[in-house]
Image (cartoon, rainbow, N blue to C red; front, side, top):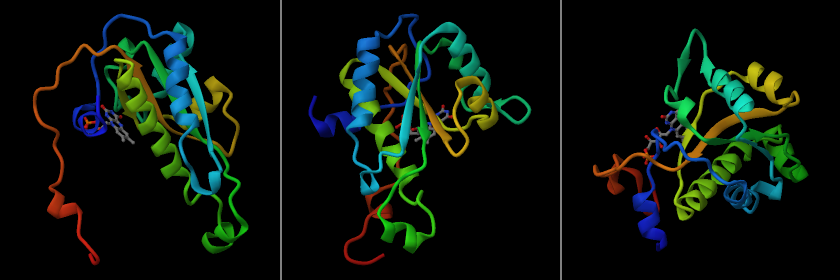
Length: 182
Ligand SMILES: Cc1cc2nc3c(=O)[nH]c(=O)nc-3n(C[C@H](O)[C@H](O)[C@H](O)COP(=O)(O)O)c2cc1C
């Protein structure tokens, strides 16, 4: 599949077949994250693959916030997840000096890693969906994530049980792009 087709065809998947994802494929997906560029090459991330029943149960619990709200009511059918954790970045001194902290690029870096994972998964015939909201305290408790690190999203991975016929809903090119000025 060429790149433009891949961009046009990738969709978030919210219904999955009852079929496991191999560790080999999960590691290929993580490798796509590992190779992602990052500000100052800081690689401010840790990727936790969650594919065992007990760990998945805990993750599904941590994907609920406030009093029972979740972005992923469909989460229990997902065969595997990659939890993307933002870690403290070591950046060039001038970056820290200018912005006053080290994490200026880190969220973008983690987001880029996630998208590379999505497209690698797609090449492997797998569907994905980012899940943005999570209970940080539970994430830390369940997965031993140290203080100073923040879960940015969990990426659901599995064989899709969906078909997407409708076109993607996106702002028009005119609305989001201009040349040489705002
Ligand atoms: C950071 C981020 C967080 C997201 N969180 C959720 C979520 O909690 N639940 C969900 O169903 N989709 C979630 N999505 C998927 C978006 O809703 C989806 O990407 C968007 O509607 C565009 O649709 P598409 O991915 O099919 O092109 C998230 C996407 C991103 C990038």
